[in-house]
Image 1 (spheres, rainbow, N blue to C red):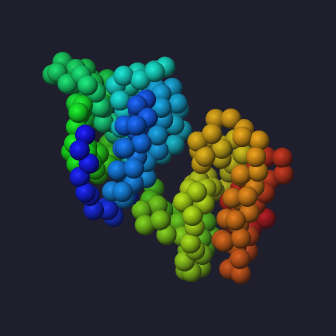
Image 2: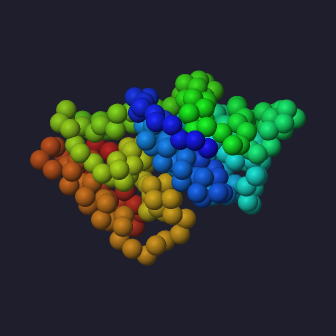
Image 3: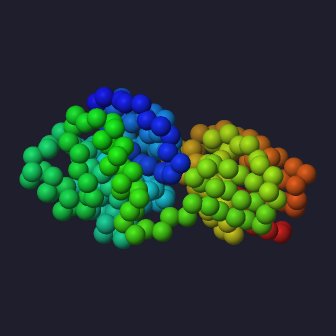
Length: 237
């Protein structure tokens, strides 16, 4: 694969890479981020299916041969559940019959390995533009707090708030689920990609930092602690 220079795109997408080759996955994640997108990684078919099924992605890039659950099974399983997120299949199997099988399994595009990143990026952006008719929210609002997924801007009462990447992702998830209690387990899985309890105060530290930034001298509290359960974003107590 040859990495070519890409200018950052203003149309930021959230992309899931399901690839068991960690070197190849790291390459893709880095290159997609340099192109202005948000990229997550799953190293096997089972975790990839779970992430694709429980989170909002604009495009899924999935290797065909995966441990635990193969790529075609991941895609067909998502389609059976009504998930229409566009999927680009990557595979060393590039014959016509292989491509036809992938498309019939529910894939939207098929790219044979080895490939040039410039071509993969172009295909991903085409898939992201059409998104299979899926309505993806690009901004969230709770009271006078606004978050824009595309520009990564956060404002409270019109005043910009600077957040670190993890803080932004945490706030994005909380605002997406505004009005609902978000548990610590949900935060660990969807913000930190942990599927176990690390037995640390990482959530408490980030919640404290986030609260100080979005509520300091700008208005009433929006981020509330629900004792014994988790947190909730809402206007008022």
